[in-house]
Length: 269
Ligand SMILES: C[S@@+](CC[C@H](N)C(=O)[O-])C[C@H]1O[C@@H](n2cnc3c(N)ncnc32)[C@H](O)[C@@H]1O
Image 1 (tube, rainbow, N blue to C red):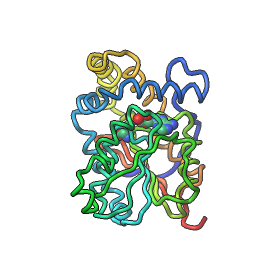
Image 2 (image 1 turned 45 degrees about the vertical axis):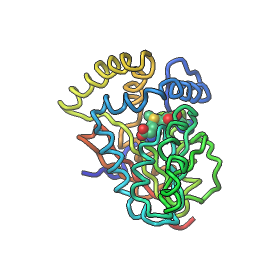
Image 3 (image 1 turned 135 degrees about the vertical axis):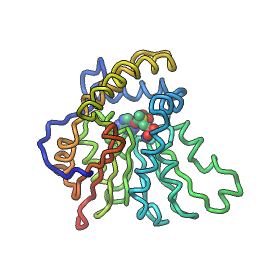
Image 4 (image 1 turned 90 degrees about the horizontal axis):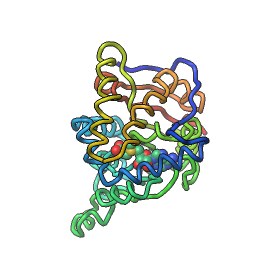
């Protein structure tokens, strides 16, 4: 099942508790990820029962054609500790141009670089041209990248945290080449009975486990709140269309608990 563009847009951006404006929201998100970085991978895999691996791998498969092109310029934005980047790297050929993996949380990015950076490979692998990624500390809303320079921008579970969704889509559009592709993997709220059961897990069980593992209250209360605040698919697709993207679509994963938004910049600039 795939949803095409329709609906209206009212989206703004992430609203972490205590943040009064967009700058405050970005700061709060950055500090929160820095603080949970040491436990992030463990929490992720426990809370998602490892289904997240499936989602990263499905997302990478969706872009297999561009990933197979050794010269393609690819950005994984909001790469965090690098699991999406690793799934993308699995589909890169030997000797491929490195992927750019960017995040504004140094704590998250430095852990990611240990997995995907050139120095993570041993010398013989590097000499064989094993694909790797270059870490870049950067804000998704102000990318230090040339306009129209990328073939693919991917973001997994990061977009929902941006302080301004429309500004994020515009910035990704700016850096994409004409015809370049966008993939945004993020949570959503499934409907029906399953949705109700999932809401109990997401809003009650998950924050309790999160608190137990990371010893803090905030981040795992913020997670369900941030998904509730994120525009539903129809609204997100309308926003993507309004910011200039073509072929906007949403593919639900695992009954719509998560889903992949895809779109492209028009082939003619
Ligand atoms: C939930 S983690 C996802 C990490 C990884 N992509 C994954 O799938 O596990 C969200 C990441 O987005 C990053 N992030 C949020 N807002 C950002 C922004 N404005 N610029 C850069 N990174 C941002 C956070 O620092 C965090 O590392």
